[in-house]
Length: 330
Image (cartoon, rainbow, N blue to C red; front, side, top):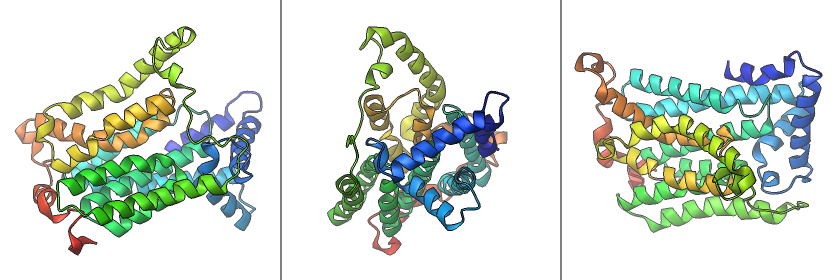
């Protein structure tokens, strides 16, 4: 349903909507494949090259349809990965509620761009990368983590933000500097290689042009727009943040470690992103929903809490079993 709604604007009763949307879709995809777009967009090659390759292998299916199918596949895997991650801390019913909460927020986040977009598909892929990385760090699957970070950096450079979670996990467990250096290397290698190999007319690594649209009073003509953008963001993330920080020390240790990068994530996107684009905040839902869910369960009456209590194995696993430094888990 999320993907169908995303595609729906193509068929609105307006003047040539399908032609316009398909033109914008194709323009962005061709700009990445032909290396005519400026940075940093031209370095985010995973989804555009994947759609282009699928279309070349089976040209009877147009690229918009390939994108539609890819969105469905990515969302299915996002739900499964996030469910398994939540299941490490909560019962099955609570984990399912968390996934449905996540789905609602994803649906809201895809409203910013009208119609299907390669950019949104890449952002959904970024959510999948985040969810798989969180699961791999928590369960101590270091090889899987390295593979996820390596592939994810070809999609978006936000994999750098995942490294502090690994650092903190190692810090509170048996620290292995070798693992930390390997993790940095599997992110740095594709990141710098793409910027060395791809020739772009404007080889910019990151943009700060929207900062005046994010922070009020930096630019008088954009102050009102910045205030509105911050208000929208407050409605989107405010409930999650308030529910999450309430009795923060009582949350499972790993959930606190993962959520500790949320301020860094927000600050970075205020500087190099556009806070109006709700799609950029989708990875943050993976960090904040578990905290909010944990507190909501605690606030329920005891009779209602019986079937959605925390997973009985979560405390024991959180303390020792799934440390990233545990060699038996690699």
